[in-house]
Length: 227
Image 1: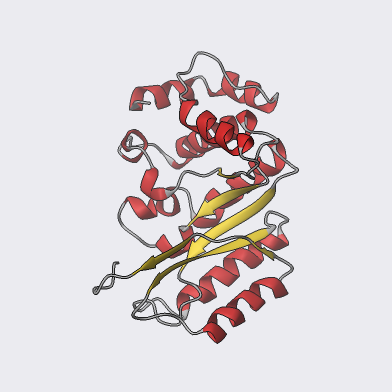
Image 2: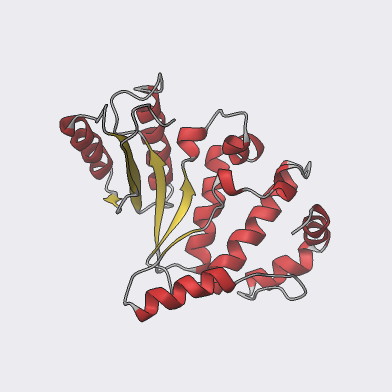
């Protein structure tokens, strides 16, 4: 998709929005479903569950959006379009959707990694994503995914990172827009977090009435801290 493609969607938003609200994927737009169709086919053939990501991860934001110079309102339309068509296409196939991924960790970043927070807002982008999940795939669980909150030492981010994350999930839970939390375990073997610290943070999440989802796990054996 080029900048002009996104501009065309914004210009034709009223007609596109009508189609989306009816649960239909708008025609006349070039989609590429082949990669996701292959993953879905593989999972079904091997009796595997599927978990999707409704909001594009900051690091994967295409340059045609990042460099497009779009206003907040235009970006909200782009988000609603991209999230909605994905949810409509995959309705009933995912047992849960990530409404966001690492937005709390990357909040404040001046690079692409902090794009949605700067451009739309941490809570506003996540709320939009979660509301669309409830609208188009209500049987699926809504999850937020983040990283390093269970580590007592992570640069100079803690304890502020954990405090900000808990405030974030509490707000979404109170608004009925969150079911599960996924804290990734991307760990360095030379500075592993204490088990007690990790368990304590998970208990805080569960105390809010939230389930804990299966996390991404990466163990780094490098001699130098990988971040």
